[in-house]
Length: 269
Length: 249
Ligand SMILES: Nc1ncnc2c1ncn2[C@@H]1O[C@H](COP(=O)(O)OP(=O)(O)O)[C@@H](O)[C@H]1O
Ligand SMILES: [Mg+2]
Figure 1 (spheres, each protein chain N blue to C red):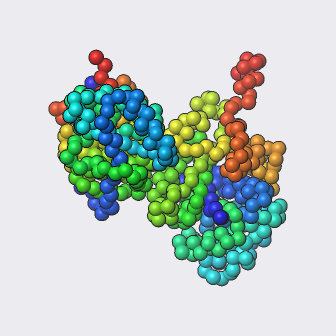
Figure 2 (tube, rainbow over the protein chains, first blue to last red):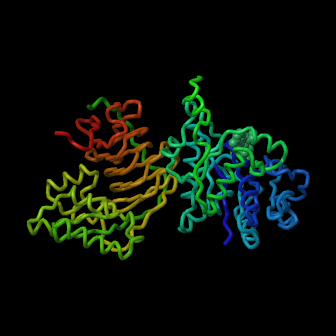
Figure 3 (cartoon, helix red, strand yellow):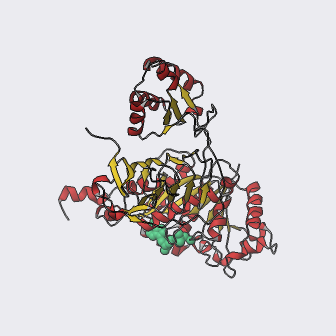
């Protein structure tokens, strides 16, 4: 059975698109045929992160309007032939998406793909609503700060009450916490919430912690999902997350301050 | 430790809402021998462990009391929790047992009220919608086992029992009492139709606002000595009293 994953948060700029690109690539690399859809109509940037912006002919809205077939609009990834991208339209607004239209496209994708990753726009309005409505699993991307945690909490309430699964009284969406842009040294200084603080507030299953990392910017500049940068900490964090999602048992990393050990040893500030 | 509390005007809800009532299994006891109870209950649970796992339960000790056996509610509750069930109330208890139950944050149901219907089937749970009123019989208890998240709003006509956390930014309201067997971080308003006898009970008080019959306190007014603690909140001479749930003698 195909599974629809929504990558969501409520707040903007927390790393949803970075995460969508990374986990879609990770799932495809593990041998699962995967599609990743940009729901951020009007502000598309998934195609940039995936490095396929110069191959976009048709987009999500064209398919909904019947102006192109799904096969015409799907772009095969240059690094992995099991991964396909459905870009968003840059020229329309969010009203171009309809629940019925989105449902039809997802149904069609489900016949052919194992995982369908939906990159949600920020906010709790129409675009974000449509991205999460049909989901089976939700990756809730949260930054370790109070306002981001609060927005995620809000989004969790919406997942639990406004999704298709909730409306039809089916088993609820499976919710996972992805704590992103984590900087242990700043946690230590009290400038950021700790993993435990966030867990305490959200009481949600932690799928992984992604460290604040320069490799993310490098990856997006070069148009390759950061998970392909296997030496980078963020890349490894995403690889762990994909493995855990697929059932592997991997210990959590990137939570502790590596420098802490040396600081203790040498007594530097 | 009461301080002044302000009066908040009551605004009638301006929305149309869904209704639901809940049924909870009732454990009718006919022996006060804890060993035998444990053994027999464990046997039943072993038959269908998934079915019973974390299932809420109301303890009925009426028959037992009639026979003159007053069982210790604290010990009984501990035993049942150990087996993996969640006692959420008692009925048919004597004064001391009812007091014991309240100290354990368990509501006391009356036998006749019909507030809890007997059912052997597994408890149904609800997912509250934001801005949704859970309308039910006047005497009925609304049970919620899933977290109430920021932006969600619950309204119960009778008592409201919540076993999961209530997030900051969420709002729970009841015409009767409110019980939160978890952390209360949002706004909790009991006795919203003016019932000044209504109370709020919670495991861990971190609320943004608490109110009984319109008398409220905001987080800033809460004394440090009652924060992060199991407390009960009630009205006395129009003042909100916040007390440790466990009375130290
Ligand atoms: N782990 C990280 N470390 C450093 N920068 C990050 C990380 N994750 C995301 N970013 C940066 O944050 C910004 C927002 O990320 P993006 O994935 O577009 O967020 P969203 O889709 O939630 O708006 C981008 O500039 C991205 O490069
Ligand atoms: Mg984005």
